Length: 323
Ligand code: SF4
Image 1 (cartoon, rainbow, N blue to C red):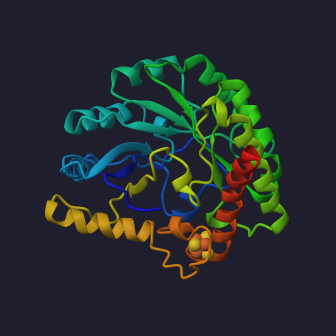
Image 2 (cartoon, rainbow, N blue to C red):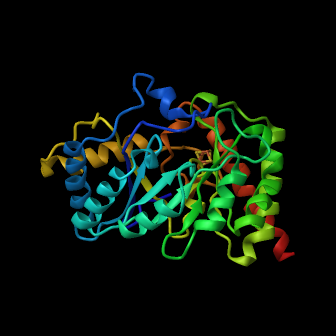
């Protein structure tokens, strides 16, 4: 993974800590137990974020900028969501997208979103064979996508967390989603508080299952997004996207002072995506391992095992194709 030019950045703004679900794995609440779950981003902080994002958007085309709203659940703030989206569009000229659990999506929300400069919704979904406690079954989300998604306001599948125990079912999970809405979710590794080191057998299953998915969908133009914390360079057809979190409390104390923005950005980039500094020059992935997502910081050995398991799936597929 190399920092390509222009650098792709996604500014991810947490606009609320309110949520209408209570998912057992949610790292947001696990890390922020002090939050009351009734806060909406203050205008004063949002205005600073607008200036900060605008700085990078307008800066000599060095940055390819996306903006997204997350939470909590962004749809819980009702019309305020649209105040934020209109302000982003009017100030920067970008239509933000919204990460949501999809519970509140309905025809009115979609109509308002079109009118108020939202570009799309991205809905997190559960593994249909193992729905986490406190969450919602993906079938309900799929029905909404089928009813409400349009070309003027797409609703796309977002993250689907896959734990080690379900590595051997990923191709079935992929089929479940594809058969309903003709796209695949972003399969994401479990990290944070629920992380468990996978066994060799589980990683072998992962390789075999991913190879099945690649083989089935590669030639029908379906986008793959596998384990973005580990192999981002294999996703997003034109390279990695670096996510810069802008939180509810402006805990990093960004100010209106533009002269501080580059330093802040570099600090965030290097802390969220530190350099690996690997010395294993004989590893077949040496050229791809430049930075890594911070969640692997204390688990580098597992990072390498996981990464090799995913690459092996691609390798096996292409090797078999050739012979
Ligand atoms: S996969 Fe691990 S061992 Fe191989 S190059 Fe990357 S960091 Fe180094």
